[in-house]
Image (tube, rainbow, N blue to C red; front, side, top):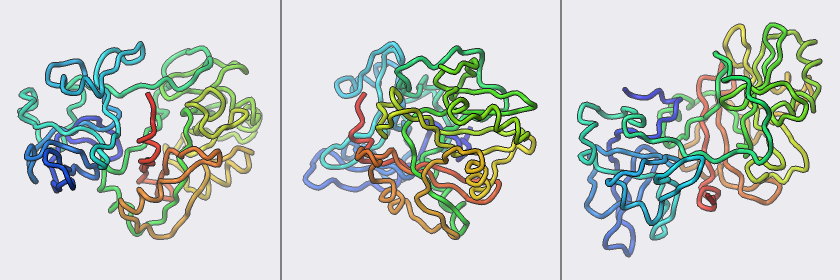
Length: 340
């Protein structure tokens, strides 16, 4: 089935766009799929061909048809098992973002068509990097039903979002490099979650750090509204602490009204967080009419954190309530420098 443009699919069937030569290369060229470009063998693809596209962060199973990747991409560890990791690389001076293979290599996909998400059929998983180097707390269950996880789509995989946002009010924030942390207050009960699990109340648990640091038990009880706050928890032991923070900090990027199921506007979110004494993710730009192209956004995504380390990128969102469009634009400089 075709995927929702707001949901990331690791492997899809796509039509190859423009195929362009690579200067001084007799054997390689660039094939474009959606907003991505991949280095491929010369003559392997032509404009209009159907192909299977594997996004960056795909982890392919150990199969004969992927053996050509062994030297560059084979990985084995306790978190992911054995397989082949797809990442951003530079070949012959060209950025290669993902993997394109002929659809004829996959007879099991004969009944599938363009845009179909075939991730599960091909047994591809998302490459997992442990997010924390300290105890996260005691897991007491899965993330409660109805509380959404945050996983913004990469704009190169959903270029239609540019047209959906064009001409509308928007804002751009810095993508902080940490771990997703959810705090909710529903019918008098406060809870904390990682991306996928709920964590037991404990002042020493990583995912409860925002509650105890900002006194949210008392503040949310006094507010008396059913809400879900999602933010990026950053600091020592989390994703190499690229911000070089001396203590844990939580940067809110979503404020959801639980009863209506809608996210509040940018202005309301920032005002509400200010009243709670909780920081939001840093705002880079606010505008009344979105006009950016993909290439312009890729340039805006470049830059560094105050620590001097490459920032992860930016997040772009519709600023009015409820925001219908949001996506991330990753910093290609950071991707190229990424280590396993």
